[in-house]
Amino acid sequence: MSFEVISNFIAAFFTLSIFSFLYKDNPFYKFAEAVFIGVSMGYAIPLVYQDIFIPFVYRPIFVEYKFLILIPTLIGYLITFRFSKNLSWLSRYPIAFSMAIVGMGVPLSMHSYVLVQMRSAMLPVDNINTALIFIGTVTILLYFFFSKEHKGVYGKVTNIGIWFMMVGFGASFGYTVMARISLLIGRIQFLLGDWLGLMK
Amino acid sequence: MADKKMNFFEKMQALDRRYIYLVVALAIIIPLLVPFNSKTYVTEPTENIYKKIDSFSGRNDRAVLLCFDHDASTMAELFPMEVAILRHCFERDVQVFTICFMPTAKPLMDYALQTAKEGYEVQSGVDYVNFGFRPWAIRIPTMLKMGDDISEAVEYDDEGRKLTNLPIMKEIMNYNEMNLVVDFAASAAVLSWITYARARFGANVAAGVTAVMAADNYIYLQTGQLIGMLGGLKGAAEYEKLVDVFACHMEPDENGIMQPAPRDFSKEIIKNTWIKMSDIKNRMHKTARIGMNAQTVAHLMIIVFIILGNIGYFISKRKKNKVN
Image 1 (cartoon, rainbow over the protein chains, first blue to last red):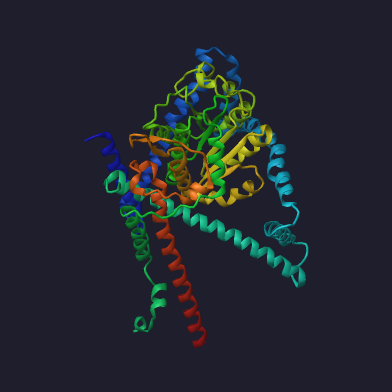
Image 2 (cartoon, chains in turn yellow, brown):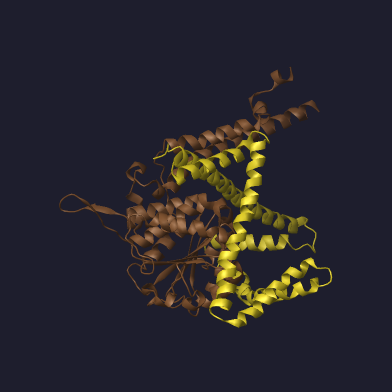
């Protein structure tokens, strides 16, 4: 029996064990769930050692003698002081360094998520699409303006904003259904094709 | 007694949900076992990615970077599009790089390369390079450094070779040459490419995302910050079709033997071309399209259930109002 056949059998067993929850909770499901959590953790530890510690810490310091790497490495290790009551303040230093990356992203994020988006919402209203963008943007923005009570004419305008949002939520939900069905299709394709060999 | 008074719609409302699971399972299993040729309409965001990649064909000073930002849980949606894009690159002689920042994406990236390579005489370091796994913590510095010099951002490839020594890197320096980044993600990871590679360096960014994430990314398509997008299994099916219709097109030679004859993208050709699923021998090249058959039937089932459920709801509501 080849490795592929054995691995397919194991994968099929766990797939069916997880699907068995659709009927009702049972020991097979619980077993598969526990194995999944264990394997995920077991997989992560050697992977971090092999793909992070060795190339980014061990090799530069002990093979290439780049001793400057010791500084960020030691700062990184300070995070382990979170477990100490007296020295937990030391763990804030690596967090502070990692926050720098957030600061660096602010101007670029402003550009991508705000300025470019605003520019594209300010198009001349010369066709049905731009008209819809204009009405949708304005009415939704008005809906989120809570300093004025939503009643009368203002309430009717904000109601249009709700409709626009509902259409948006509907599109998202439709896509979500499609995504979930796709995942089921993927698993069934595996069971019928790779495991049972019924698909051509 | 109470059961006898229930009409069809009320019975449907009280139906054990396990029957619905069973019907949905059958709605998926049957089309997968008996595939039919449902038509795949290709949308503009998919066309744009195809055309962009195709424009790099045969050029040593252009390359595509494929970033794998997902794990096995979303493989069903993203893997077919990854294989389709890689096949397109190998078929049309487009230089391609692959990278991932999630440890769990690494085996999927290797698997996609292995799957797409079948049948092509492509060579690592010459036609493609796998940059391998880079820790998430250095994702943004890597993206930014790639804007200056790729071989500084990623010194060694997955096989431990220095990037500067690889023939593929001869005419590739930064985003000016590696002019398209396609991010396959089940999260908002594509936004970081928009923020750092697009906004800072003007790189072209495209997304291959799960259907859940597709709606969120449409706003970036509208503003042109994404040049194209493959949304879920549907997007993958569209790309598979484009690759088969154009990049992998075959024509008979004077002896009647079918020979590869790639052709340029044309809306007319795609409108008039019909590829039978049974004509495609490799199952991995039509996974998404077969999946979309099942998807179509499952969606019809869901629509029927929603309609029945709503009718039942309104009937029982009316009954209750009458009683009161």
